Image (tube, rainbow, N blue to C red; front, side, top):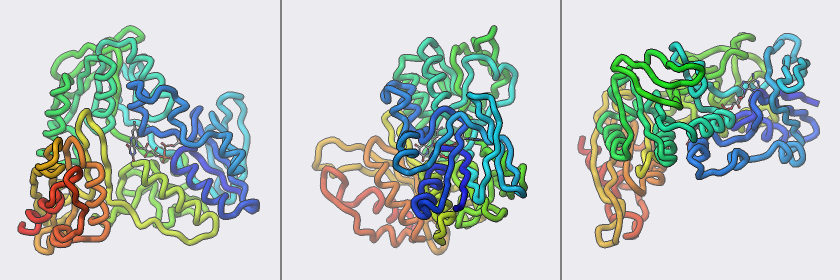
Length: 446
Ligand SMILES: Cc1cc2nc3c(=O)[nH]c(=O)nc-3n(C[C@H](O)[C@H](O)[C@H](O)COP(=O)(O)OP(=O)(O)OC[C@H]3O[C@@H](n4cnc5c(N)ncnc54)[C@H](O)[C@@H]3O)c2cc1C
């Protein structure tokens, strides 16, 4: 009987436990330890829980602990933190956060699926009540409860989580201010594309202060204002949304290799440098198919796939995760905002000689009522005209179109290849020349 210990009970950890157990059945004893009070939660839906669209915390749960235990025979220990790993002797030290006791759990295989933590600013007053980062269900509950009693909410950071949360707070009737250190929101988009999003967010009444440094949070016990290099902003609730920091401390403790991105280095079988120690999800790197390098792009789809591949290998198969192209889609107020591959800046940083082209075209045939303009932005490699990235923004028809481009990038297509794609057409869904084909036509001409 093999013993698998999984640290972290969300996408990567539970996918690994389920796959290993499914393959090895009674030959595998898999156990999951999760520090928080919830497992299998969809952090992606937390903005909709805060806004009230998703009513209960339980609605965020994909598979309950009872289902794991009853249907998959995987014991789940919530509020249990793995505080130490003894790799040589093959056990982890677990702290039962409710029972206040510590015990050892032996393992033959270890899956480190500790995810990430919200980055903080490291300024005075960050410990005040009312200042939050958003990762766990408990965070989401605390933010919702705090925002309900707040008139003014400040969001520090202009990434997709900050912007989704801005929409949530506006829908709750709050006055929202976004403080952004740089001059651009959504830094993984090219500036002309993120400008479209900024315009939309401002049009919904959100104040955006760019080039603004947060110096401290002030208040007596509870946050009352944010002090910046350009003055003070009143706020009873603050969300710090500066991105994700991979939880690597446990891995580092036993000599797991950390990659150049700061996350755990894994091979395509999700193995770390240590025998029988696997990792994946938001604590680990993933191979980027376009840059041909390990990247840190923490997303739920990647975590599920990487976890399953780890579990399959632990379960005796020989599977590989081919990697990612960094596809992400987000609803920001009335816009669908999506990207895949590299932005122009990222492509240049990776050493590609590349150019960007942008078009605007209708989401539906002009003979059919409704429809909106979609802005399509391609990043193409000079010379061979291979596509390196795509970004799209519009009020409809973006989310499914970006997937065409994700597939095209993964297949290594050129602009010419994409121009000849046999895409579906009917007036309610697209014009005869789909925006993707129009964009590819421009990109293939350079
Ligand atoms: C607000 C928000 C919106 C998002 N929206 C999207 C989206 O739309 N699309 C998308 O693809 N992705 C989205 N993501 C990202 C997605 O949620 C993550 O990529 C995914 O949850 C990663 O899963 P994971 O299992 O690797 O890590 P996590 O979800 O971080 O889970 C790791 C778990 O490990 C636990 N843990 C850590 N250390 C220990 C320890 N020592 N002992 C025991 N337990 C431990 C933590 O408590 C945590 O619950 C969003 C994230 C957030 C926060």
